[in-house]
Image (cartoon, rainbow, N blue to C red):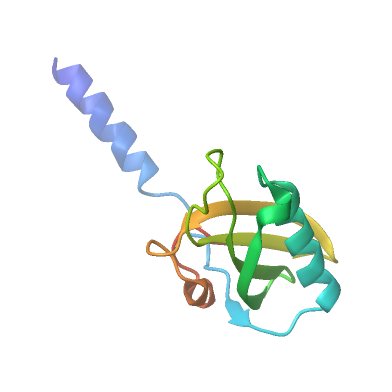
Length: 124
């Protein structure tokens, strides 16, 4: 039994000594209208009822590694035909091409402004 505890402690100790990765800096920035339109059309295409989507405010950011981030609020109908409530979609672009999409982040759990601090679900 002691061997087990010793092995567990050694394993735990090794995982805590890994190299630290510096955080990516995300700053509010103006991005191309084509990037925003591309983000909106991607979000629209992922909905159950693409024609029902209502877009809200958009916030845009750039990372120090060159990515553009479009934070788009939206509301769309669910499977029951009712509007589900406002959600947030994050689209990350590189050279105008979409590389990552995260949808359905509830408004209360994450705000578009949080992306500028690098926190929450959308972290680089």
